[in-house]
Length: 309
Image (tube, rainbow, N blue to C red):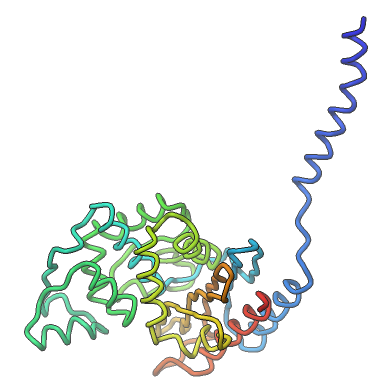
């Protein structure tokens, strides 16, 4: 009798608790006012400039995030080289490739925009180690260096598999440079989402994906990189440190692509990671347009203001 009575009385209470837990788990988390304001600013920025803008910002300390078209796919262009450099450092550390062995190259390996390898060949040098190639890839976006590393890792599919193993289920590498930049609308090859890229980069700097020595080396390379000073990093507060990896593509019949992935290190805090991908309203022949880079600079200002000092 007692047991039966207890079960009858306890069941409604248990059911109520389960219902409350389910309701809490299913309830969407209300964004804070700063996130609402920043999201509205990103939407207005896209509307004002035309084209398509994708952004994801992540405060690695608090877990707060800010997004606009954050789950849409964009062609990575050269932003993938940040992930590639990290993959090479880890592969050398794990023994999947020899980080001290010379990797040979020749004029046959050169493709458009290969400044480091072209200079080495002009000086009579035809070998670099994998970490040296990774540094060239990150700092100067050297396309031939990137291709050598991709092949050394087993090709684009093998690189993608390594990214999957690291927890990135979205970013994919399908081709070598420079073909990977040819992405008509709707083509999924060589693409990522702003959220996936930012989360991948966050893991590089806030988890044990890289050993501390490689993490610090990658950070130094990003800070030393000078190609994105007019993009996201234009918003860097004087007392913050920042590094980035840019990506760009100007191809006939396709919108211009102006991208940037940056890590901001506020003093005494976990980093703030921002991935921004901007496709202009149409194809514009010539060089990278200042107004397109200015869009990313404004994204940086919005993200920094959102993150707070």
